[in-house]
Length: 354
Image (cartoon, rainbow, N blue to C red):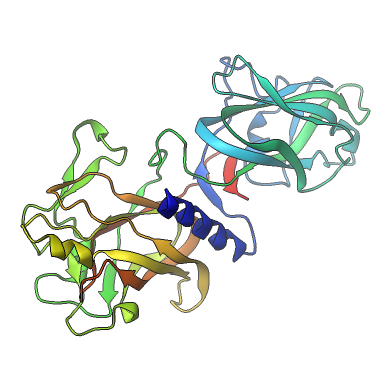
């Protein structure tokens, strides 16, 4: 639990280093009859959750309810709202509302009552009364700013301490990114850096199993891992992944060094702590970074079906470098397999880290 808490703090460090909020997972509004429509008027609610505060949704009611479906349960702490401000019709914006949360979409708990939401205000913070776990969020408007017919809003964002779903940390993962190449500070014969991206040892899990659908099978083989050369300083070792072009990197999934060949000591080659730096297309400009990230050790069994997911918050980058701080005690250090998954901006509300 301490390792996971430290990892969460490391993820927050990444966001603190960034100039703007980075979308982490794509989620969507529920725009179907199951929750009535997000907006019952002439303009679809997708404009309220399209990631563009310059567009708006308009509703043919002065006191509508807005329903947001995150598609999975997340820990949420606040909303960011850009109130209606198009064509001098600020009177259509939300003035007073209550905010409810629900796991079912039918039974609601009120977590916030808002009065006097700034007319034509931008990036307005609405607290959700602490950190709550929910799938659905409902904004129930009790008054607009005076328009006799319409109510609307430009943009709504959902923020929380983590972009990882509560019930399945691997869902929803974006498309897998094909890594163009990998380099490392050192390597030894057979146990090459390329083993971390060529799926050596990777097998499909029947039915999706662990949520990612793949596992790593040690099977007594060394040549399915990457290991540094002998006589090296562990804290000087690194491995660098080139994704071929800049992409919004949602997540990195890591299978740490693993071995089931009878020598338990080899397991101590696994990375214990590392810094992760993301670089732009030029390979020099830093796009984001995580420091002192704890890495969970391999299980020492042939079936390694619990890889570690590290949230990279859809940071736009081409290169990802892992700089090793420490391992679990061996003179050498290494990893088994590393995969990257891409974030997407589909129409829908974007859950972001605060």
